[in-house]
Length: 223
Image (cartoon, rainbow, N blue to C red; front, side, top):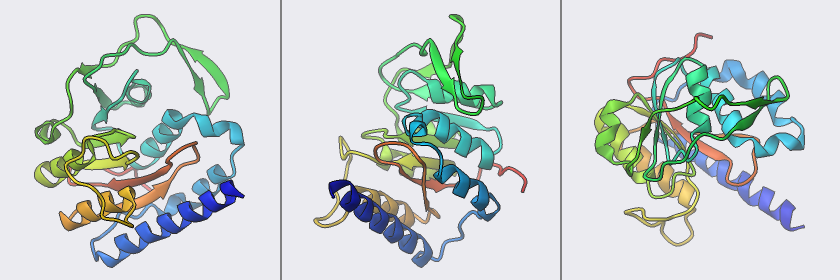
């Protein structure tokens, strides 16, 4: 019963985010041509739900042309590595350096992949600040605690796009009002800054509702 209730709450939040985006009057990026693929992916086996970096990588490369991307709070850097393999210039921005994992699951080929010990991704071993936005075309924050407001500031000031999965309210300069979900608070902040912001969902465990803004620097994959 609890899981059913959680699904209802999550669905209501997602629909509220869609309403906020539509009510803003800001032009949204159109990825309608990918609707059929998204529907298939939504029915994927349950085992897919633990591969959040792989799922986000697949979503990104289906929509955005290779660009300069910051993987904020990127930890071991698997997402940045996968983006590099797709021709992107990806950098991990995280004050704590961690080496790449020694293996990962290729969800397309359905097999384990070992990483060469010499594999590397570039790192900026420092907290993300809005000033860093000028160095990138797209800012990616997958549960990047304490960075969501800074990412929005960077997008407003530098014209970069963003893809965010806000999770916990930790070390942020603002707090949601009573009764307002943190995700909705982040979406409202972006919309108030004039940034067309659209919600989307991926099939992984935990907080799986994302927000994206294309920005002025990112090219889109041809339809």
